[in-house]
Amino acid sequence: MKSFSILLGCATFVLLSVTSCYYDVEEELYLGSTCDTTNVLFSNQVSLVLTNRCLNCHNSNNAGVIGGGVDLEGYANVKTYVDNGKLLSSITHDGNASFMPKSANNTMLPVCDINQITAWINAGAPNN
Amino acid sequence: MPERLTTKNREMNKLICILFALLVVTVSQAQDDDELAGLLDEPVVYAQKTFYSSRIVNSHTTESIEKKVLDFRINHRFGDVSEGYDNFFGLDNAAMRLSFDHGITDKITLGIGRSTFQKTVDGFAKYKFLSQIEENGNMPISAAYIAGITMNTEKAPQGRTNYFSSRIGYLHQLVVARKFNNGFSAQIMPTVIHHNLIDSSKYNNDVFSMGIGFKKKILPSITLNIEYFWVAPNQISDQFVDPLSIGIDINTGWHTFQLHLTNATGTFEQAAITQTTNKWSKGNIHFGFNLSREFQAGGFH
Image 1 (spheres, rainbow over the protein chains, first blue to last red):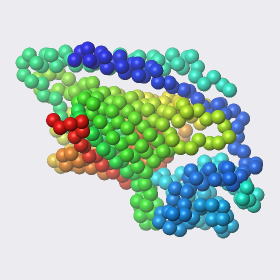
Image 2: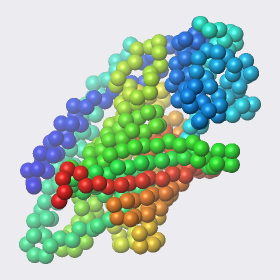
Image 3: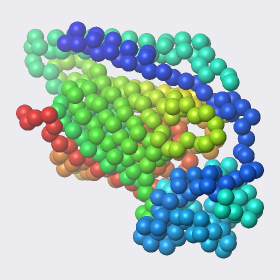
Image 4: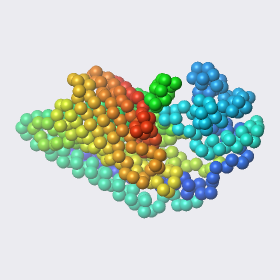
């Protein structure tokens, strides 16, 4: 039993000392990379946010079930909610549309995501 | 590109690892001596059910999973009760964690889980190296050491070099518990959490915190549980607050139901201790439950 304890202690030590800790800081690691709101493309930045944060519920199959009837799959559907203002209202939590995304703690999207989508909408929400 | 890991940090890190390992070895040897003394006369009686489950609410207890037993857990946290009737007091939204904890021996548990919070996969190893002795021995406390690792599996931002290491976080936790009598147990949980990547140099990669937990029996199979973690100041962003959870355990043999109110929506340590944003003072609390079902695994006894 005693030798097993020592073995386990050694195993713990080895396990802990070989796993690698890093001390990275985002603002230092990505020095100078600020939120780029120029040249925001529907096919790039906007689609990434939609895919990661919206389409789990608001896809064509689920929209009627858990997405409140709001389908954001594809440019044409997204454009509908850009034009009636609900997309921007929901992600900026301005109270004119049901706030999004819904999650257990209802935090807003990252500021950069909101700024990029706002910039894209201000540029006329092109299908680019 | 700045140096990603300084030599000083690496040495510091090793030092912490060595200290933990030494602690495990010395204390487990001490216990062997106690067991030996007990064999000479009367059998040693260990304290049973210091806590009903291997978790209080989010935090580990000193309870380990028995050898060859598989504990399937569903941790569920609903939305904010202050959303009122529109979202049925939060029940329209939910965050959850599915996990399997397996007893390798009666003292060693390995676990793996997946949470909706930042799509995190987590794994841990837990070693209960001290067991409180109630009769024919001298050990006033139970203690366990937990080492954990987490991996965020969300899609990374585009347009920059992303490192796999940035997804990883670590946990080191010591849980020291005492069963004062059949109705009341208490524990403390000194905890170190490491994030490989943080937002700003204003904050720390290593976050130190101290947790306390209590169990008070209110009916034969029902206990009241409280868990709180204090995070030492100036380590994480001001938007994050200390997690406080209050709940009851209902024990029915192989099942344990845990119902609670909490301000933490993440149910693993990295999320609950260092990334809780909701405040009790503003009524941003969440109803939640943990469901634990234990199975015999690896053959029958």
